[in-house]
Length: 173
Image 1: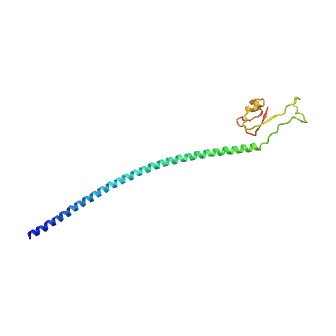
Image 2: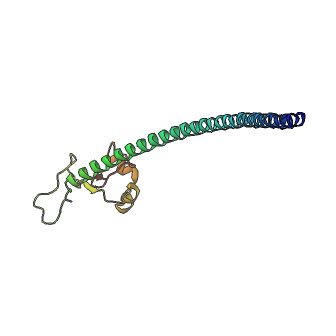
């Protein structure tokens, strides 16, 4: 019996040894998985921190673009308001030019009354007028009518030669 007992004891010790080795292996695998899980968790934390930094940078860039957009909106609105004012002024000028009656040039042919006499008794010539047309300049008007710019300005006190308008009537000397 000694042999039988010693055989069963040695197979039992193999089972126990095998189970012990299996336990050690399973513990090692568990330890490995646990440690590697912590490494993955660290990687995820690093990735999240990196993504947060990118979001912060993008938010800053977005704020800068919003500021530029607000500036462009303001500039565009101001420019459009200026254009609107200019259009309104042009409309008013056009209406005024259309409403201004054309001054007829006095006709000397067939006149039944003589020109008025001056205080000295000499006849005076009737005053001439000129209606401003598109493209006219005071210098051109003076040249075409045989006079000077200074003479036209003296005959029209308050006339600004840089602000003449189509349809405006001026006196010629």
